[in-house]
Image 1: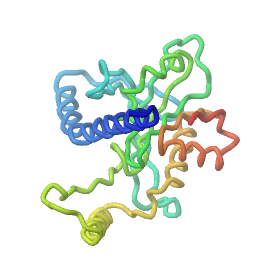
Image 2: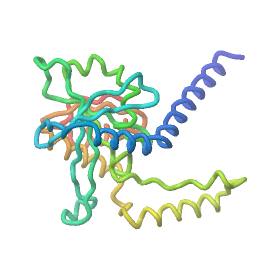
Image 3: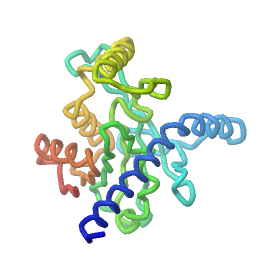
Image 4: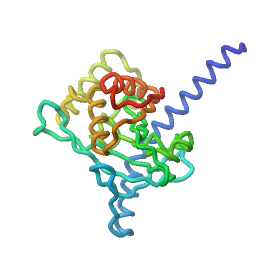
Amino acid sequence: MSRKTRIVLALLIVAGVLGYRYFLQRAGGETATTERNETTASTSSPATLTKLGSLAFKPCSLDSPFAAEPIEAHCTTLSVAENPAAPDGRKLALNIAWLPASNDAEIEPDPVFFLAGGPGQAAVATYPQLDAAFKEVRKHRHVILVDQRGTGESNPLNCKSTDDNINEVTPTLAGQQATTCRDTLGKRADLRFYTTTDAVRDLDSVRKAIGAATINLVGVSYGTRVAQQYAMRHPATTRSIVL
């Protein structure tokens, strides 16, 4: 087997593992989150709120089947208009997690925003398995995770798959499934406003809400596109991007 072939196979294996991990998170995340929230509600006292900018956060834990242990964080939501041209219309609650810098005496003013891939992956659910890579960053900078609208806990746009009961998926059948999915989601979301442009606008809304003059963006996969789009539209508030 040639060296080039071995490299290609290795990359395919890595991609497969990451995809399987994401599938497991999507399949089991909702149940695990519900159970954890119910347990916390019945055994703990009212959470102490901590403010960052104008947002009030409460203690929370971020976990993953592939993380060594839960990561202590602070969580909140930010209400934004689904349609920016209709501020009094339907609202979305953006799911946000804040991982405070560990060195209280030397915190830099520009936090790091982690942008997940996909499109479709959620930053809050994806981050825990990558936390080790942010070890040095987290000493002096806060890390902010925002579930992009349509993902995670920010009005997720998910459709049930029926492929398990079908022997062969044809282009015609795939088109029918896509149409059904679109029509189903359209009953609770205006799909015109779940684009990268809208995600960039949401990120800047979060930046303003936490009181950060500039931010650093770390993008993975599709997140690299979001980072570049943000930097293009908001150069004055972009300190750095890592793709």
